[in-house]
Amino acid sequence: MINSVMSLLPINTVIQTRAEPVLTYQHEIVPYLKESNAYGNIYFSRYFEWQGMCREMWFCECIFPNMFEIKGALVTKFAHNDYEQELFPFQKIICLLNSANVRRTSFELMFRFYSRDTNQLVARGTQKIGLVDTNSKRPIKIPTEILEKIRRYAMNK
Image 1 (tube, rainbow, N blue to C red):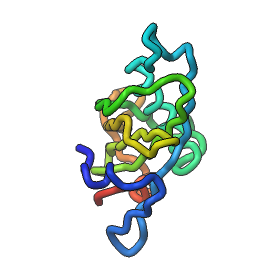
Image 2 (image 1 turned 180 degrees about the vertical axis):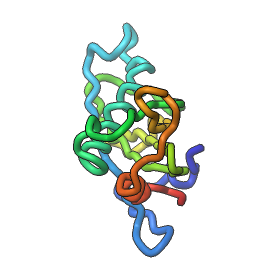
Image 3 (image 1 turned 120 degrees about the vertical axis):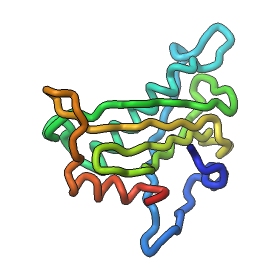
């Protein structure tokens, strides 16, 4: 699960846990009116969509530019989100992403959503991602060069 101490750090904190600092990916999100309910707060399902958007941008920008060239398919095996406070339309959000528990065939992603204006944590979530063979649907090894890049974002190794 998410380390509670790490979630309390300011957004731009560099985490030093070994010789080189852990990288943290940042993605900005702006929810619109159509993403809210009659009370004006943002639908809970949007957080899962934001996890996916942030994951895909991180993978494309930082790990491997063309996901479709990877032998196999990346699949979400698990997703979870905890809500800390309500969000409203046009309240800018910063999503921070780190990896964890990086293995040969899978890894976890940790998401922390902060209000850009207040730096307050509004939600946190996790996903477990695996690489599977497209024909057999069985787990396969993630290529070493991709694993090395994913580990650069790992909060634990």
